[in-house]
Length: 156
Image: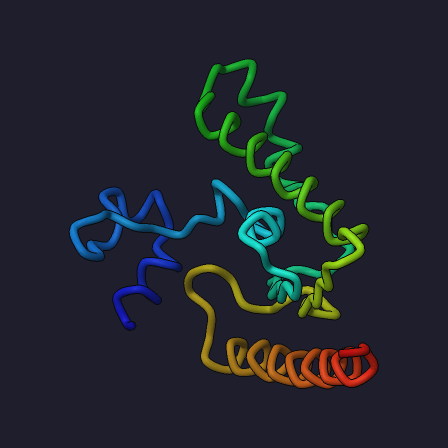
C-alpha cells in the first residue's frame, strides 16, 4: 500500500521513471486528469467523492503561469510545459463544470478547503501541515454527515 500511495503523489518532474508498481512506472495523474470525475462516472460511479486542495470555486488557473505566458512565449521557453498547463486547465475546467451540473443519477460530494491552504507542495513546516490537516479533517467529517443525510433521505 505504501508504494501505491507514493506513486499517487509522485510529482512527474521529480520522479522521471515513476514509482515501480508491478513493473510499471506510475506517478501522480493530476496533470493528465486533475479531477477525474468524468472518468469515475464513465466507470459507473454514482456517488463521487472529490477531495481538493484548493477552494471549491477555483477554476484551476494558475495566476503565476498566466502572468508568465507572454514572457515565456517571447523567449520560446518551455513550450511543453505550457502545452501541459493548457491540457491541465482544460481538463480541470471540464471537471468543475461536470461537478456543478452532474447527471441526474450522480451525486458529487466535494471536500474543499474554505480558505487557501498554508502548506505547499514541498517544504512546509510541521505546524502548517497540522493546521491544514485539521481543516481537512473537520471538512471531511462535515462531508460524511452530508452524505449520511443524503443517503437517509433517498428512497431505496
